[in-house]
Length: 169
Image (cartoon, rainbow, N blue to C red; front, side):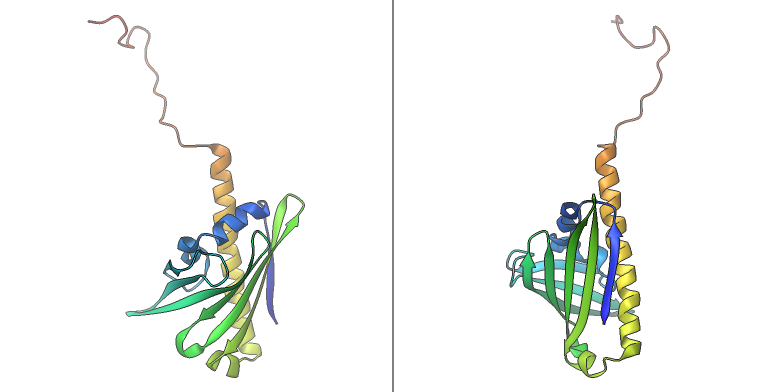
């Protein structure tokens, strides 16, 4: 079974904010180079995004459909991958203390992926999930750190006494 988990050191709401933004799908899903919502309101059930996969000079546009959404808790997707068929990808968020345990479960549904599914294929999915969860963690944790630091400020430069321009005509 292609099930993988990762503890992300932010609260579940912060992880959900990233998952709920269809424009950001390509930032955390391994293999995609671009994504955009095309139908419905992501991540509501039935919503669709298109994503692009680049293989050298080839660009393949596929789609992912939301099959189930429990806001802040669970997102189940059906990814269409052309000749490879479709896959079910379930992402579950669990509060873990002040952090979030993310569990990803993926299985082929139809097409060549389902017919060719074996231990080797399963190992590749595990590697992909490891990279995908690492990307998601980096994204969520860096945004949380940026929020703590606050907006960037202009550097303060020292001014010698009497050079502040005050009192000059």
